[in-house]
Amino acid sequence: MPHIAIRQAREEDRDTVLAFCQHTWDWGDYIERVWDDWLRDPQGRLFVATADDVPVGVTHVRMLNNTDAWLEGIRVHPAYRQQGIARALNEAMLLEAMQRGATNARLITESSNTAAIQLVQGKHMRQVGGFLPLTAQPMTQPPEERYPLDEPVLASQEDLEEIISYLDVSSIFPSTGGLYYHGFTAYSITDTLLKEKIAARQVYLLRRWERLDGLAIVETRESSLGKQLLIGYIDGTTEAISLLAYALRRLAANTHLNTVRAHVPDLIMVRDAFTGASYEWEGQTFLTFERSLEA
Image (cartoon, rainbow, N blue to C red; front, side, top):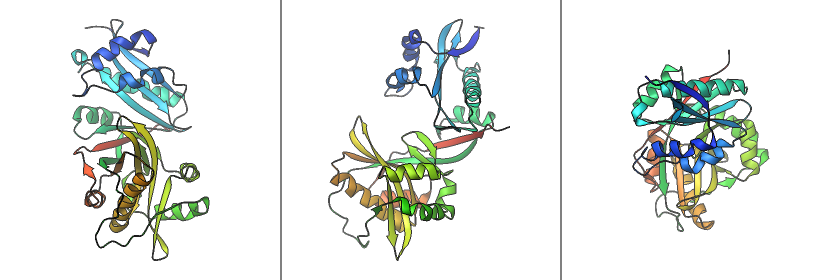
């Protein structure tokens, strides 16, 4: 058996690691695009697992804030799987997170990745939420159907207490673990995050019958598909979510974005509202796991 060790990654590990990552999925892997950032990340640590000093595994942990650690990018060379390497990498990340003061750690994995799910559950991580990725094209004209054209408005700091009160009684919020998704990273929806998103003009509110009936947290980003509008959290009644889904497609058109991508709660009512608004579900489901690191 080779000698397995975990250490901090080095620049010279790059080619070896990318070589065993290149067939992770049919299209390849994203590790090449993030390697340099992860290697130099002051808020995180890039680890490699070695077999007789040759890199055969890789992973990255980073602090999202003072208390939340994010675990990502575990890869193991196909010839060295089933030897406890992924488990050792996971332990190294958790230890690093605790040393940096994290009180909890989270990660995302696809629902079909049974090996990863068994690994994290074995490390006392519990599922706290999940999401479905959906996409749609911008829409310049409102849909010709029964919905009135109620339009969402940008939230202001004066709306913060009302938003918090709304989320406190929401049935969707706890089912998502209270998380906002920026791509494939989950952030706790705290009053601090809400203040930041409101200041950045990224929170939209839908008011109907003189009350808050739905809300969405969004942002834009550059991707290989051009400029995208990302929907990272949505809440409301089924009708309110449908109205928000349509309105955000119109917003994307008005701001000259190329696509709309939504990471929405894995709930039938939410999925049906989005597919009814002509968003396409890609067929995948991603699960979010969490572990408390407090003694």
